[in-house]
Image 1 (cartoon, rainbow, N blue to C red):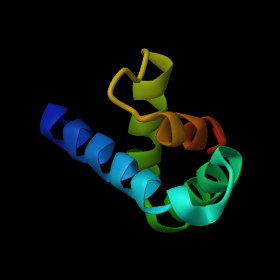
Image 2 (image 1 turned 135 degrees about the vertical axis):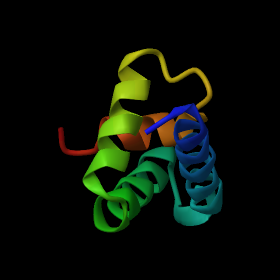
Image 3 (image 1 turned 180 degrees about the horizontal axis):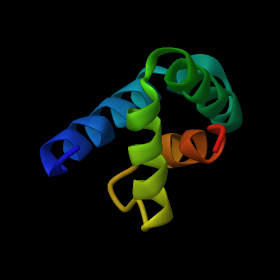
Image 4 (image 1 turned 120 degrees about the vertical axis):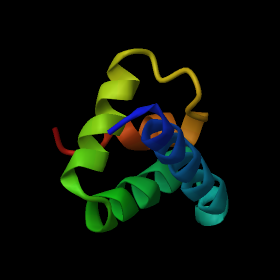
Length: 73
């Protein structure tokens, strides 16, 4: 997957996080985002967003960052 795909993944996870802000606490919202990613994203997508976070994940918003840390490795 190229940089265009990574940019799309970053945009998607940030949007999912923004859409779940109302869930409750930041931890609750992150859990909802992580659940969504676990259920609906393909393994390569999850691996790429995990790798991006491990390299710094600068463009992830706070809830998205927390959600990615909760994904199974």
